[in-house]
Image 1 (tube, helix red, strand yellow):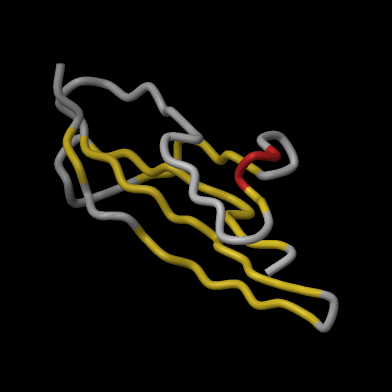
Image 2 (cartoon, rainbow, N blue to C red):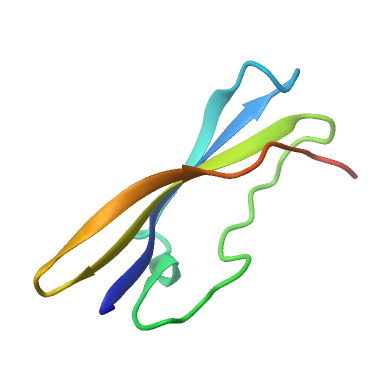
Length: 84
């Protein structure tokens, strides 16, 4: 694939693990390494500094495309609690 990766990654936060609110969005236009080509895999491209004891999850818009078109999907990570 000529283009593959995450177009956006949005981070959500909660104090109780139930009611989440948006806190940040990272875009591939600001972090070009989020989008690549071929079968390259990047780990830890974005680091979000959370608050100890709060819960977080991320929603990513992932994209794959070539000269004939592309497709995108949204996927959520698991909910994790920030620890020291």
